[in-house]
Length: 394
Ligand SMILES: Cc1cc2nc3c(=O)[nH]c(=O)nc-3n(C[C@H](O)[C@H](O)[C@H](O)COP(=O)(O)OP(=O)(O)OC[C@H]3O[C@@H](n4cnc5c(N)ncnc54)[C@H](O)[C@@H]3O)c2cc1C
Image (cartoon, rainbow, N blue to C red; front, top):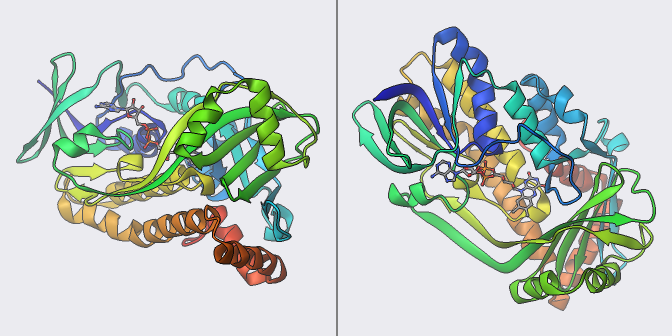
């Protein structure tokens, strides 16, 4: 039976980022970390037209700078110079500019596979042991930690277990951790598209009566589309031909970037807001999408998880107590509580306000957008939330 100090269950972007954030201190203190993941990580990155991407906030850039990873990520990160927020068929529109906020970019769009590749390259195998491909099938509470049963029959004990196995965490359910679920009745359709004109670092958030869409600037003049529609309609958009799809998209988005010429593979994600009712127990932390899954239109989910991840690493590194000590883990949760509440609330409110076709709400959001453009403090607040600088200064 082998034993490690920290077992991170799930080597997605959140689990691997936590391993990196702990790595230097782990080396100094002799902590052993296991990162358990069923799928081989992106060690052999290949740029792809169909790759999925994430909008990293400016705050996330600052975190990755601290972790020494930004230089690598930046090689394939497309800076967002301007966010154009508009409402189809109405006048209200607002522009958030990096230059007005005094930052080099409002955020950066990066392919998930590239972030994974950079994380994989940065992890030191002497400190972080990848157990891959491997899956945790069961967790058993011990007095001094957890015993994990892996799918290949092996067992692993740890002082601290991190549950970073994603939004549909089967282990969370197995541990009896309840969730609050608010289904949005919508799905997000994701694809990369190529416009005729150069995107020039512009991101578009466009609200229509059928649901919000975001078109984010990506390297090689591609744009990453996140298009939220009622679930049945999203299924339809997934099934139609590429030409018909581009036609409907063009109609909804307009010609701000000229003709939309090519679309890559389309993927669907059913959307709900899911929040775990517990994030810490003695010797256990629930992290990333397993702790909170947000609507993607506001681009906040991963950015919030990265702030959680850094906070958790700082609290663990700064603690004198044993790993897994409940008071230390509660301290982490208290530290992140306000950020989580505000970010989840911001995402949820933006989604509900802008996904609604009721005339009163439509008029309200129209005034809201006009007002946002006229009222610098409100716009500044929106920009800071969008940049992931809302509740703390990094
Ligand atoms: C369509 C869409 C677009 C998005 N865009 C943005 C954006 O622009 N900006 C942003 O901030 N956020 C965005 N998000 C949110 C972001 O994708 C998530 O916050 C992020 O993926 C969460 O990462 P995670 O590591 O917690 O979970 P996941 O990425 O789901 O990773 C979980 C990992 O755990 C592994 N695993 C599962 N079960 C087990 C097990 N039993 N044992 C071991 N390993 C296991 C899985 O293989 C996986 O690798 C978006 C989300 C969606 C759906």
